[in-house]
Length: 154
Image 1 (cartoon, helix red, strand yellow):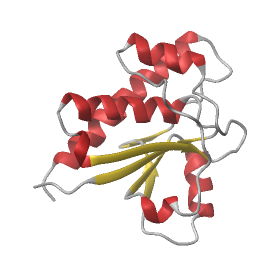
Image 2 (cartoon, rainbow, N blue to C red):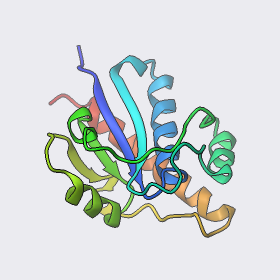
Image 3 (spheres, rainbow, N blue to C red):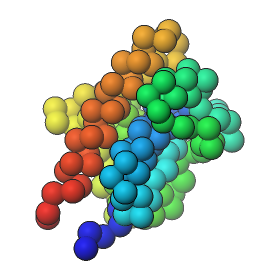
């Protein structure tokens, strides 16, 4: 039997990239019938959008690919997240650095979602629909590789 895993996806405001990553990963584990193996959440390093739903463009691109983000609400990373989650996945190097600086305790492994090779998921907030499509493709690829790695025997 495989032990449950807890994953936190993190970007700057928790309205574009990290909710999309959470939704994509959730859809992948649901498709495999493995929802009970994972606790999933997303958060931002910034506090600007706390309580707000994901950006409409993230909701739209997710829906286009059969992923529902409608129940998500933005929150900020909290100190207890570093103990609550097994793995914290940053969308880019700046958020990775912010997470490492914010951790004062806890055992969570902090890494980039796209870590082999290390690559940022670019923030699409100030761009158009093509930026969100690109982010979806990167997040989907990263989530598929992550799930595959987590499925490998230790």
